[in-house]
Image 1 (cartoon, rainbow, N blue to C red):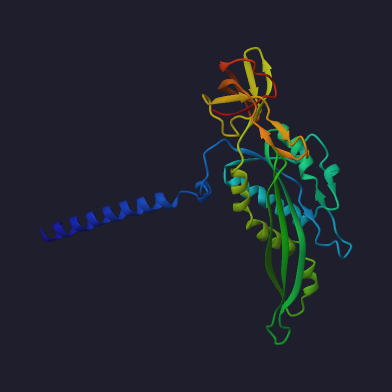
Image 2: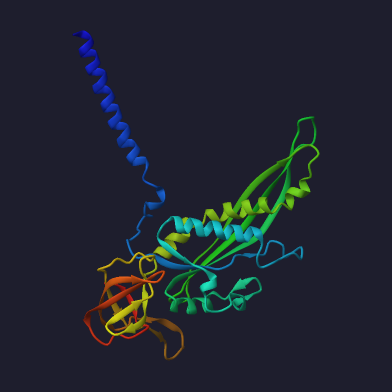
Length: 310
């Protein structure tokens, strides 16, 4: 009888332990990328154009170039981080209707000009990344049998973001990053100084510190799409499943906003919201990221009218 009671207590304790472990594992399994940033409002995914990164770190030595392996790797990492938030759709530069190099001068993009074109593509923000400087110095000692020498590489990067709707700057920050590498007694620290992997590691670490601030800046922008085509009683929207729109969503269609300027000084005052024409109901998807809608209310809706969630 004693053994039976003892076994019962062991089984009960095991069950409760299993239950607690199950509860804990459920909590810890929630991925951090799905947790919203503070103040985030649920909305369709915003389209973001991340321009090819610029590397100006070699300008003083005459080795400056618009693009390097380090800048390309840093850009790829930034895009991966943005995608991991599941709140953005990153548009490829190849989908931009014009050659981006024509907007590049003196190691800087004309972001206002790019933003005007991007707005017509339903893009919310345009992002420029730049490697400003790389500095390296030796670390360690060459004294001793087991001694090692190395290099500490430090760098400074800049990231800018413009709202496509009005061409206004929404983010402009600089960040520092650092990485170290060592070599054996007979190794060359000069080789480490020129190691593109080490330089790339510094750039990636520096840009990583900007991701949350960049995401929060883009989150503050209002989502909007466009009516790309009207065929019969169907309205083709330039955003769909990939952007997070759902079948049954109601969109309001409005005229484009108008710019208002001071009649005396000519200074830009702001945008006047366009007149609301009616509402549309999403009924299906098409293409890579498009949706088909039918008229829900109103009249006079035309192609290129802007749409947003009602």
